[in-house]
Image (cartoon, rainbow, N blue to C red; front, side, top):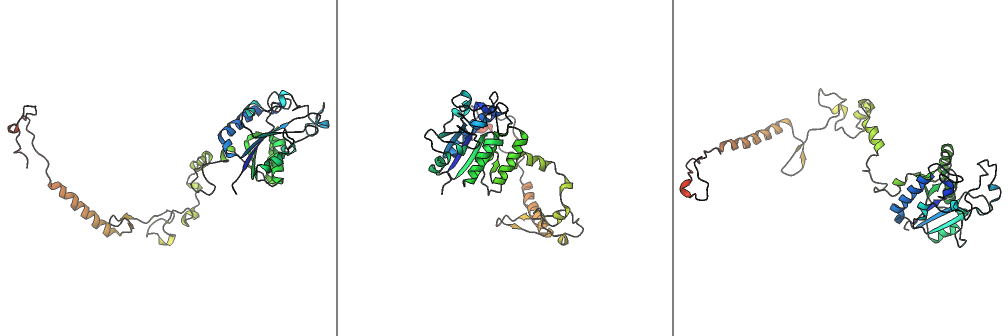
Length: 316
C-alpha cells in the first residue's frame, strides 16, 4: 500500500507567540520555519491539517491565579485575533482545520473538530492516512499530547524537533522522554525526505562527524584491530609478513597491471626487472632518430617565393 502521510500543524497561533497571552519565546520563528517547510515539502503530504485552541467557556482551565500546570491565563479566546492562525500558516494551502477546547481544557488535536463538526481522527481515516508528522507549539504540551495520541490510535508518528518549541527547556526535555517512551519518532525536518535511502551505504558524513574524524590521531587507532585487519586494510596476517617487516605496519601485496589481458597479476622482482629492461630497449630506439636539421635563414617565405628558394639538402 502506498504511504499516505499527513502533517498536523498544532496551535501555531499569535496567542502562543511573542506578544500573545501565553507567548513562547521563539514562536514566531517556528511559524516561519514551518511555513518554509510546507512550501518546500508540502507535496510530500496527502493531507495537511491545522489545530487551534478556540476557547469559549473552558471552565477552570482559565484562572486569575493560574498555576501554569492545570490552570492558565485566558488565551486562545474564540473569535479574537490571537486565536486565529498565525499569518505565516494562514497563507499556506491547508486541507482542513480543527478547533478544540471550546468548553474545557484541551491539549490534543484529536479533541478538535472541523467546521462540519467532524473530529480529527475521522478526517485522517477518511483520507486513508497511514503515517503522521506533527509540528507546532508547544512541544511540551499540545504537540506532545497530539503526537502520543496519534501513536495510540495506530499511526506511525514523527515529531520534527526543529519545527516545535517547548514552554521551557526543562519541560521540553521531559516531553521528549515521554514521546520517546510512547513510540514517537523524533527527528530533524531536514531528515524527513532525504535524498539518500535508509539502506544506502554511501551517505556522506555530517559536518560534526567529519570534525570528529579529522580530530583523530594515531593514538585513536586500536593497534590490535589494525593487526587483525578489522579496518579492512591489511593483506597479510602477522605471521605472513615479509621477513624483517614491522608487524605493526599495514602491508599491501605489490601488484602490477597486466596490460595484455586487463587483469591484475602478482609479479616477482625478476619479472618486473625483465619488463623494465624491455621498456628501456624500446625507448632507446628513439635515440636513433635524429630530427636535428639546419634551417636556412635566407629562405624566402614571402608570397613571391618559388621552389628555387628552398634548399632541402641539409635534411637527412
